[in-house]
Image (cartoon, rainbow, N blue to C red; front, side, top):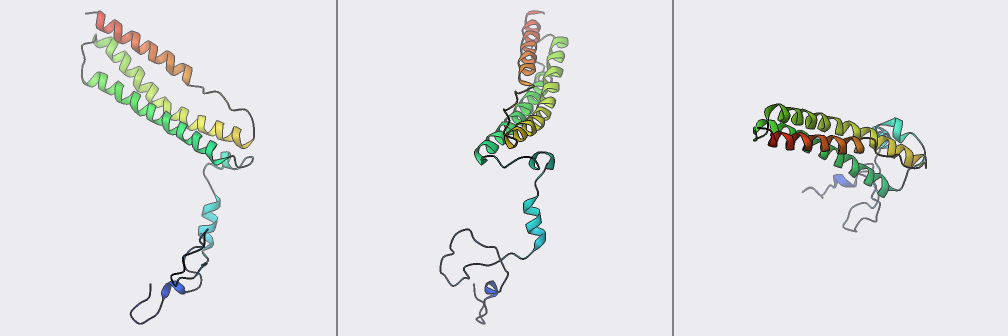
Length: 161
């Protein structure tokens, strides 16, 4: 874009970024370089280094699938906490002691789920980078058992006056 005096500040050397595709010919420079070394260093580092510093870069589709699994575990945790709080807050027609026990178990499971998400993501990403077999999900069987216990507590709470 040119100013009224005819100057074009975008045409200065070193302004902008280098495009990965040819720029349209609309009077702009085709290639401009990014000269700030801080930006270049920042794009090379990723957190956590204990995961990203190992092995070779896996196919992006598998890393993205691992991140979706991470987000699914976080969503499960949020849902479990919400149900646990809601069960106690709305005071449904369930025997109070059993309702409290079920609520506490749901909140504990919901709090543990993001922890499982983080460590599970790190184990799977490390295994993919080191080209090892993928590890099993550690908390899934515990979550199934816990939800079974919560279901039994709620059914008993409904049956006991």
